[in-house]
Structure formats: structure tokens, C-alpha cells
Amino acid sequence: MVKQDSDQSRMVQRKKKRKLRKRVFILLVPLLVIFAGVGYAISLYIKADAAITDSYEDDGREKSKFRDVVVDPNVDNVSILIIGVDESDHRANEGNSRSDALILATLNKKDKSVKLLSIPRDSYVYIPEVGYEDKIAHAHAFGGVEASIETVENLLEIPVDYYVKVNFHAFVEVIDAIGGITVEVPYEFWESNSEDKKNSIHLLPGEQVLDGEEALALARTRKLDNDIERGKRQMEIIKAVVKESMSASSILKLGDVIDAVGSNMTTNMTFDEMTSLVSYALNGDGLDIESMTVEGSDYQPGSIYYWQLDQTSLYDVKTLLKNHLELESTDLVKKSIDVDTP
Image (cartoon, rainbow, N blue to C red; front, side):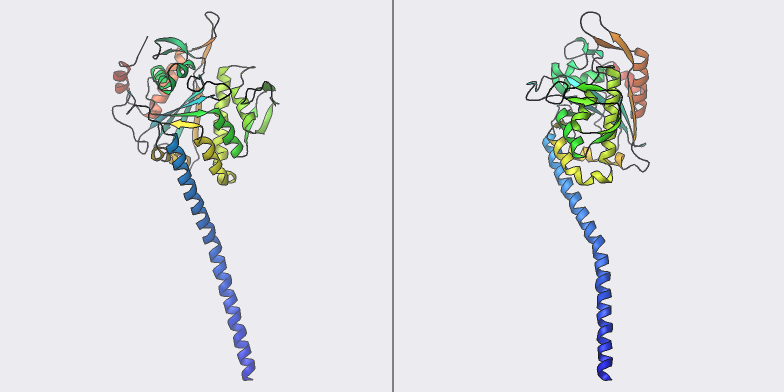
């Protein structure tokens, strides 16, 4: 009888131990997941810090001439000029390439909103670097990033606080890294790939998932429409990239995205300044992005084609961006006196 009681006691103890181990295991699983996630986040942080630090280039400006004081993106509304170039070994044009895309982003800290202005590359504007009017895309060929910033500031009469210059190789690699993007292709077309192999990309109309080379072809082409429509497509592609990059399925691919961007980007933003913009993406209501462009018309006074900006549309865009940055109108009047003009 004593032995039977002892056996039952041992069985009860074993069951308690099994239950305890099960509970411990149940508690350990989420802890391990959390620790793994924290470890991955730390490794991404370190990787991003290194990539952006390597991409940093001092543009020689303490601040824009439209600013009285140096801005702090942690507390101030700021603007970022995104310069897309197609510099490659096979084109042998590094350092004197034209800008293939110019997009000015204004960021409002209070609203956590972003406005994206696509400036048509053929826009006929005054370029201070050379002292005459030409296509805005030529500013980069004349004087690099500095000339592009000066031209955009002169055109819009607002500060360009930061710039991000991205080679189109990053465009292809980032989209491939996140597994492609879903966008609407407006019509059937053939286009060259990133190595300039003619008609190597063939797309049919409709919503579909595009890889990097296909998305680049869509961003480049304007054979069947114009620069305005191309600018609109480029911004839709940017939105698609942002949306896919922020999705749960892309979290584990962020390391590849950092590698792709870091090796194909230069910027005057430090890592701390760039990380201060993360709050826009973490906005509880979702990232609020509004895209726009400057309307205009075809202009060909001789053998060269230009896009003549509509002055009313330009004024409306300037006003909208100034309001979004919450710039003082009196300060703008004062600063406009110092702007280079023909």
C-alpha cells in the first residue's frame, strides 16, 4: 500500500514537471521571437548607419539661402530634392550626366504629410550656373548637385534643405530586393533595359507585378505620351516601392534594400537626420503622400524641344509648397530679392 502511494506521488510530480516545462516553453517561444526580432533590428540599424555614412557628401552649404537658421528635421518642416541620374560604366558619363528625374519632397512635421513635386526634365528654366535658360535636366550636367539645387530654388523660391542623388541601378536593385511592385501599365510598349539593350523590355497594359528592370522601363518611357505623364508614373512607382517596403512580407528583405541603396546613393543627410524622418512612416493614419507636377505646354523655338511651364500652375505649386513648409510670406519676399535672376 505504501509502495502504491509512492508510485502515485511520483506520477503526480512528473505530471507537474511536464506542465511546468510546457509553460516555460510557451513563455520562451515569444521571448525568443522578440530577441530574434530585436537582434535583426539592431543589425539593420548598424547596417543602415554604415551605408548612409558611406553615402554622405558635404555639399558645402551650412543651410539654404532661403533659411535664416539651420533646420533640424526632428522639429522643423524640411524639403528634400531627389535627383535621379543614369550614370553607368557603359555610358561613361559619370559626373556630367543629366538628371533623368527631379522630385522635390516637402515634409510637414505636424501633419506627418509629404508632398512630391515632379519637375519635368525638359522644363525651360533659368539655370544660374550658366546664366541662361535651358532644360532643367541640363543643370546637373553643367554643375552637378549644387547647380541642380540652385536651379530648383531659383524656380520655386523655397529652400532645398537636403538632397538625395540616386543612380538608377539602385532603382532596379531595390525593387528586385522587395520582390517587385504592383503598378498599372497604361499601354503596350517596348523599352531599353538598364544596359541600353534596345527593346529588351516588353510590357502589356494593365495592373501587374513588375521586377526592377520592368519598373525602370515604365519610369523611363515617354514614347507614347509626354514628360508630364512620365513624371506621374515615376511618383506612382515611388509610392508602390514605399508601400511594398513597409509591408510585413518585406521586413526580412530590408538588408538587401539597404545594400542596394547604399551603393548607389549620395546625400548631404547624416544618419541621425535621416532616421528622424522615420516618424512619417510610423504615422498611425498611414503615410500621407500627395503627388503633383507643374502644368505647361510644348515649346520648340528652333530644333530643340522644351516644356514651357504654365506660370499660373507654377504660382499655385509654389504657394502650396510654401504653405506646406509653413514658411513666412514676409520672409519669402525678403529672400526672393537675393535669388539669382536672368
